[in-house]
Length: 428
Ligand SMILES: [Zn+2]
Image (cartoon, rainbow, N blue to C red; front, side, top):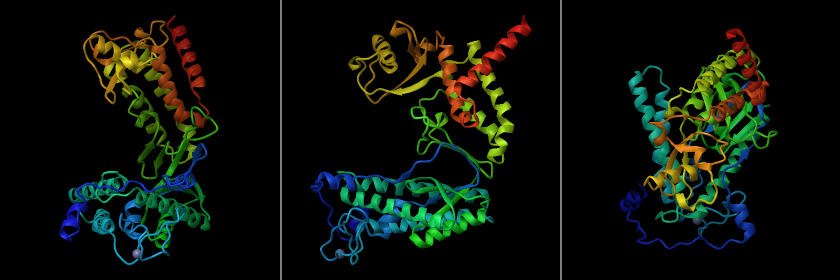
């Protein structure tokens, strides 16, 4: 689109771009070479929280602040300063990239508006939704492309200016929200989670409109959560991890990020167990009601663990995807990926770095590394798995969700083994 715009306007396109990054001192590098701003959440469960998102923040910044390869550091202006990093963009001449972006931003916001019209048929709504989503991804890639070395109209300094404005705008959003008595729970690049006792949708929408008006970048209201949970970090239990949460909006829609269920290296079986637990807890209308659904959640864990113990889970359900970081024979330690890719190699299949391998854990603590895991392909004919290890993964996924409610993996394991004992006694 950039090249087409340039052709239409008679702008020369560089045949080979030769514009290396300008020299920076170490201090300048530290100031400018940063991504979006993050406010770390405190681990725990929250109610009365609203999520607000800046719509297409980075492209909107490029359009509003005229950020483009040729507008940055122009010689005709000096007074339009990019926050934090002290460069400026031109005020007199409109940049090429903003000219390309503006119609896309406008069209996307029009589709989003039309989507909300209640009078339209479902099919038309879906059509608008798909169109606005595809435009969204074009806008997202435009930001990355701006920092890409070989992009004809890209420039790393322009890329840095965008994130600098982004950090400033997120701070402004935080301050505006706090001015209205909200407390910031979490924020990440272009989204904020704010708390206020008894918050209503009307309040949250008013806040979003206020932030839009004051910053000049449209902010949309995503929803109010029945409950929102930030699990603790596994390695640093006093902290939560940014962008790792599970929550349920007032309309019942579940939103999760960063937890096992969303990770591609989680076995399907474990992901499904965690999903079922969250679906059960999603019936709670507030954090206080979560306790009503614990018993049922424990039941789900029992069902899944007894299925594991029966040894009948199909291999595909237990496969763990890993990406090779080096060639199979270049690994020096017996990590799972090394063992599995080497056994494939022994049968004549050579994987390259970057390729994925699917692994079944067969005997995690075996003295012979070669027996610890095997590739999924070998499990299709001869299938056995390490029940204890998979149980541990199951309990870990359950712990992510249930620990804030007082159930860590240790306690869950105890409950399971007590249950198991009672069953055995009954059978006996
Ligand atoms: Zn200028």
